[in-house]
Each structure stands twice: as C-alpha cells, then as structure tokens.
Length: 104
Length: 474
Image 1: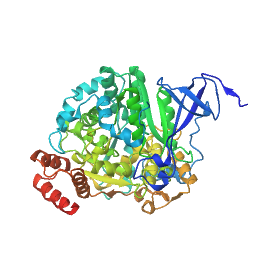
Image 2: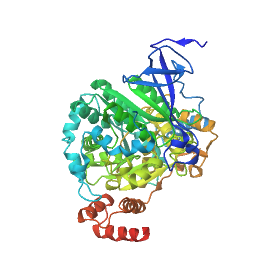
Image 3: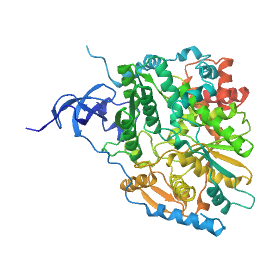
Image 4: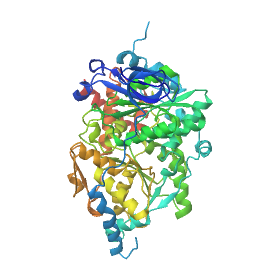
C-alpha cells in the first residue's frame, strides 16, 4: 500500500479543468488536442497517497480537490549555464568606451 | 443539483460576474452603440494624481529614481553620426516593493477592494503584476488568488513565470497554474464567481490611474534635474496600460510636447494560444503577441471596457528583436552597474537606436526597469530556447526569426528598430469596430466622435473609412 502523506504537508495537486473535446472553440489544433490542466499548491487537508484524489487548503483559504502529484515541490527554475554570446558583450562595450577615452 | 461548469455556460455569465467583481457599473458610461465616456469612467473613481500618489506612498510604491545612463549614452555616441546621440535616462521602477512598475497598478486596485469591503482580490496574469497584486494584498490583509498560464502540455514551465509563481507564493497568494490556452479567462471567471473577490484586472480605471503617477513623476524629475521636460518617453508596450497611464501622467504634469513611443519585442509568427509555441517565446510580455491585438482592439480585456486605450496616446510604435533586448540587458549591467530584467529593457533597446536619430542635447526617458533573478534572466531564457531546439548565435539581429533563431548582436551598431505603421493599426481598429457593430444599422454622432478619439483621426475620415469597411464586410 502506498505511503500516506500527512495532513498539513505543503503539496501540489493537479486536475483536468477541460478535456480536449470541451475546450474553447477556435483555438490552435495543437492546443485543442490536449486538456487544460491546473496545478495548485496548498496544505493537505487529510492524509492521502501520491496519485490519489486529495483535498488541499490553499493560501487563500479555499478547499480544492485534485490528484496529489507532489509533496513539498521544489522551485527548480534557475539560470543554467552562462551563454557564450552574452558573456562577450560586457568586455566589448567597455572596450568601445575605452577607445573613446572614457573610463568604464 | 450542480451548476453547469461547461466553457460556454460560464462564459455566458461573463457580464454578471464582471459586474459583481468590478465594483463598477460600466453600463452607466455607455453613450452609444460603441461609445462610452472614457474620461468620466476614470474621473468618477476619484483618483487624481495626487490622491493616487498618497495611496501609493503608504506602501512605498513610486517615487523611484530617475537615473542618467551616462555610459550607455556614450556608447550610443560611439555609433552615432557627429552631433547625434541623445541623453538617455531610466526610471528605475525595479525599486518598487515587488520589483516593477506593476506595483503602481496594483496599489489602487487593492486600496479600492479593501475600501469596498471585498475579502480578497483575483488577477489573471503570468507576469510581474501577479507579484505586485500579491504584495499589495499582503500589506492590506486581503486574500489573493493569481491565475497564471504557466506550463505546456509536456509540463515544461516558462522560467520567468516559474519565478513569478514563487514570488506570488512568497507573498502568500494562492497561485492557480494552468497549461496553455485562452480558457485562462474561463478559470478566472469561475474563481471570481466562487470567491466573490474583487477583479483586480490590469485594465480597470484603478490600474491605469495608478500608472499616471509614473509619467507625472518622471516629467517633474526631468524638469528639476535638466530644466525641462523629456523630448521622448519610451515605454515597453503589451496590453496598452503602460503607454496609456504614462502618457496621461505626462500630460497632467504639463509635458504636452513630449513624444510617447511604444516599444515591443517582435514575436511575429508565434501563436499566443499555441501549446507548441508557448515555450518558444523568450519573452512573456512586452511583445507583439499582446501589443498588436490590444492596440487594435483594447476591449478584448478581462473587463467590460478597458481603461488602457493605447492608440489614443502612442505617437510612434517600434519593435526590436529578442536578441537585441538581451544585448542591451548585458550592456546595462556592464556599463551602468544596473542588472535589470529583460522585459523592462525592451524600451531601452529601442531607446539605444532612437537616441542615434536625435541631437545630443535631446532627452530620452526609458520609463521602467524591472527586477531580475532566477528564471527571469536572459541566461535562463536562452537555455530554455536551446532546450526547445531554437538556434542561439551571435550576428546580425535582422536574421532573427521568432521561434527558430535568436541572433544576439556582436556590436552596438547592429541594433535596429522597425517602425510599426500606426495608420495600419488604426484601420485594423476600425475593422474590428465594424465587426463588433455588424448588427448595428447606424451609428450616432457620439459613436463617430468616440472612434475619432480612439484613432486620432477626424470624424470625417473615420466615417469614410468605416463605411468603406462596412461595405466590404457585406
């Protein structure tokens, strides 16, 4: 049996808001083919297992239901590797000003 | 019995949901089939510039520094003809509490929501405005819900929006993250109906009046520092609020001769509602995917009548490429010690080129910066672009192709702008108006005057062009 996540944990749930055949008319085909999906984070209202239906209390105090998809999900956005085409810019513009007798 | 939550059923309730959540009866301002009393809609809120500034000062919004970019100006002159190269100043709006000028837009909305007894505010936004409304709501003790378009069907998040999710959650907001599609508006309506919260739309009178303080401040700061008003103010242009509010503020300060230039990143060819194209855009705002449709039909917004009406205020409209904005973002950090977010620097990229057209004693003010950081940075955007198969290389930015190739200039002389034909946009506006009014047999004088105000064409010109379009439509 899957391990239960304790009530009160900070989690994310996911739900399908509109299935592909229920979406708005006149949207591009690639968008029409996939469902409109929602993901929201909040505090788990009652113990539940990952992949099961669960209810959360959001920071705004609302109760929302969906599939429990993550526990304490990380913020994974960052910078990544420097971009060589950008790295050269600082030195080149400083050199242009130096050539004009300016200091930077 | 459960309510019908189908797309069509919820959209059909649009008018009543909007009315309950806006705290404003827009119907009162209607003066014709299409005309409405724009000035009275704004004036009736009671916020003149001074009142707005007094609200904003309580949350440390506004009163941001006007910084002269001495070294960037010198770089302009390095590539200008003799005697050319206007002085460039920037209004450092990143100094606002949540890091962008959007705090100005959020402040009056939250103040109004609180005054009217709403328990919370809702905003549909994937950009800086989310953080702004969450920040203002936190201070006011109101609940806040932000609805974002955040990831594609493969679950890949746009990094700038991921950062905005984090910021909103840091300020205590509930963040509803959605996959790609215009049904964000449907979800937004459902949330408004479910909560009874205030619609803190970007397009309410409060949002626009909140920006007037920006134009007003920068005009007075320039006069105090340089002895006169700026010759040119450049604003990054998306939904139209930025140019509208700033231009109105300039006029209220008496800067009647200052030219208002709108600048957008060119994303021609990428579809805004496409799941595939979503992560092939390296900019989430300030681009033509918003600015062209909102300039040619402002009332597509999430309020009955938008208070952002850009065609009334724009004197010139230019586009720049993604690579050019990334270039100027790097140059700003290297030469001025100001590391700022790329979207806000769209107008700086345009200023760099426009300054070369003007004499060296002219004054250009770039009217915003925004904060930068994880996700919200050229490096993060270009790494995503590469992951999506987009070519990133140095070279002539005119070889840029949105969604396929980002070309980063290797020399400042390679930066260019492309002028957008405003008369073409005015015609598009009138075509949209003709479609909107297709069931309407005739228009009143008030309607023609409204269309003339909207396009800055004469009533006679509007009549002629409008009738020609109607004939063709039939």
